[in-house]
Image (tube, rainbow, N blue to C red):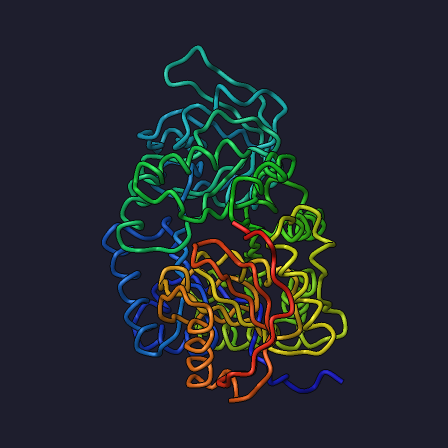
Length: 499
């Protein structure tokens, strides 16, 4: 019977989008205490002062409650939208809507079914017969004519499903190869502000191929942030086709079901979600599942049964994190939404459908460090014991996380930056310790930290991973260690270090 909440802390991480409902410090504090591990800043709704203010506020509150929290900067990307209209257009089936290729165009009274667009290149990309969607798919039509010979160019669209079309509503062109750049000047400016403010991850919207991610990496290098982790948002059909390449050059992916559900047939989204989660798991990459997870909790204090099932299935599929958007940004019940998400996570993780993964079953993860991690996972599988890893870069902790062990993972690092970033890794509890190159001293200090924080009891048996060389990126020793004692047994040591 699943009528209880397991004692183990939630291991699936919770991402909360900040907004008017949650950015005040008292509410933010409640969110973090309720289980939020990652705070998302949506650049579509935040100016530069807002980015700085939110980063500072998250750091202040997380320091107050002594909790490591990651900050995800979600770039707006080249979102195509309608221009300004004085009054919403009432579109009926079989109406012809004219889209004018001008950002400045404003429809006048004698142009009742005409609207501008933020993407003037649309006339170059579409052809007669192409589908066009507005307002996240609520309004649909088909291109009937493209007039490139007029200035500005115009595209006529015969409406199939009508509705009210207002200013700045989204436009989607499913299946159309667009010439839009991977990011805009606004994105680069927002990224610069976010990097200076101290964000931990950046999410790139509307990724189509690995080239988009590589282009953003070059911008980060110019900004002095070459190691900033990039989360590629999978919301275009091209991204699904090029998923392996995208995973090769990014640190993680987001299943962005909002635009994805407009760009592809909506009934295919659950299957694509499973495919994306599985592909990320196989490559040892992070995965966030997002959009409308507890959507009804924007308005109601309880979720629907379908939403609860949706969240649980994403967890059982193996997502690292589940994300709340409007629920925490503008909803009436932001804290209740996080608490609900936390309860669903714990019950799904405690179910018989949730299984650990052997590292050797992840074909894209190999090398000496994989040998140590595999041995640690085997030791824990034989007899559940906490896993303790000492890490400078976080890599060992990320790999341990991918095996989904039944035991908790404690990652001790001298870097506050690494500790904050590890807050997104499934099952990992980051702790900042002192920087020392002597392995026994490192282990002793780390164990005392974990005992002091209540994670371990003195004398408790642990499986400990560490390096003997004092070099960053090296984990070459596996030990059975009894917390807070001198009792220690090295059970595996590599002849050559893993870099």
